[in-house]
Length: 262
Image 1 (spheres, rainbow, N blue to C red):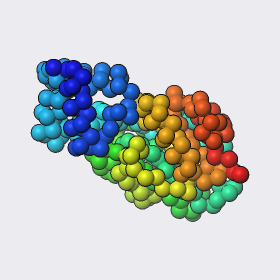
Image 2 (tube, rainbow, N blue to C red):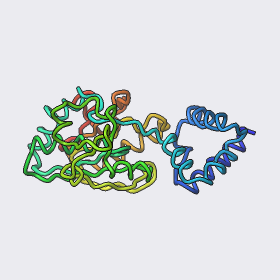
Image 3 (cartoon, helix red, strand yellow):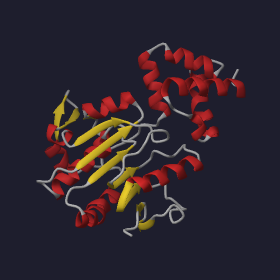
């Protein structure tokens, strides 16, 4: 029976097995998403669904992927990536010739690989650090593999597609090794694990959609500490930080928030 007791038991089991704490996510939305899975599986409780999914590695991986909303593509919202190239990165390069960049919640790897392409074009002979992290181990494995569909590349120019990918399996695209070598992948839980510091640029886009307001504020405060003075946080197109001043940021441009230099 899908009641409050059942929900609490489901949350406990999930946290024990995966470290995902649903208390930091918006409850109505998560109950609805997971409830859909329970109903589709023909089951009558969250807990029974969890037990069933846990029995099969692939089923459980699919469940976690659904839960953590791994939707991504290369150069997602191209006009914002354009601003990154024309305004944000040139500003950062004025202060540091080698950038320390973090793609937080990198999903299937499209975002950090997009960044690596930009950096290679803007500073051909410089090796920047690009850290890419995600909570989902299966998704990180997909990101490291670096093989994508035509649809995941739809926002990319044909020139970049030809330059940075090899066609494999007839209709898929594999990221070239020179781009793969630019990325350092790591499992990281944004709501629980310690943050590194000293970043010039942090991207956290389309990750916080189901987080509670309190969890978001804590996350953005942690990002603030993780940035160097003058460093920039880049968020998703539906995730404007309304209280950015209270958190210490200034607005560099819409969806780009800067830690003051002094």
